[in-house]
Image (cartoon, rainbow, N blue to C red; front, side, top):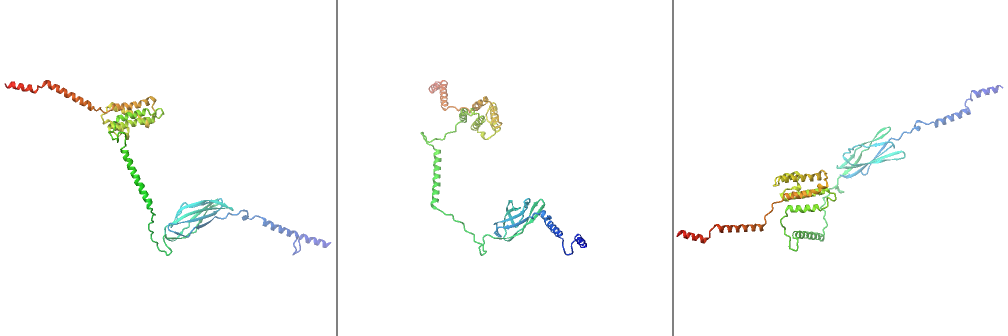
Length: 370
């Protein structure tokens, strides 16, 4: 009985030294598994990789004025934006062009690329300086700096022995004497044809012989014909009122140029009226010209649209202005000859009545002498 109580006490108070109770081992294993499975702060939230930058050139040797391409590649988070410099000073190189491609995403990262076209006008071992590129993300702005690149710039025109080449002579243009002869012949024929056409135009043959250039026609005859043509042109029937007034105004201006040598087609209405006042035109006729030109100017420039009656009267008004300024009629040479003959005969008749004839005068003188 005592042995039984002693054994029971030892089991309560614990196992014997060096002996692990089974439940204790199982608890330790469970605790280790729980600790291993518990999430760590790094595993709970992984930090994004920082942005990176790579620079490459397509060549390390170029000539003066030659072009080379500098490629800058930036890897960043998809929600980040690359901030390229507003202006680049890469002396001794000059930036000719800069092309930035849109960002492309893959495997949780984005890539943005810029290609710079550079040139240099110095000879020697030159260096493309570094510059800074910014990457803006929700966490802030990161600055990346490119690495400088060494470029060898050589002169143009050096041969393998580094000697300056001679200047090339002028390039010869291949000649074909047959082609040159054909061109010369064609030019000569064209010149001859032009001369013949010009001569034919000056002397157009007709049934009565060559047309002789006569004196210019009187201005009023030309004006009458043009006004008659305008009345029968049908412009008013088509509703082309503005064109109708422009034509009648131009006809009167050309008439004034031919009648009074006034450059009316090239003058304003005010200038025409000022020049007309210096002629022998009566003042009432001058006032009629003033009213006529003001009416035409309203239609031409002020978009005035007169009624049918006013439109129908504009050509008769123009014809009346020509009638009022006709040149004085020239006397007919035949009528002048007849008048001279009549006046001569009358003088002879008058002389026969008043002047004694020679015989009578001599007879009288003889009687007086006796």
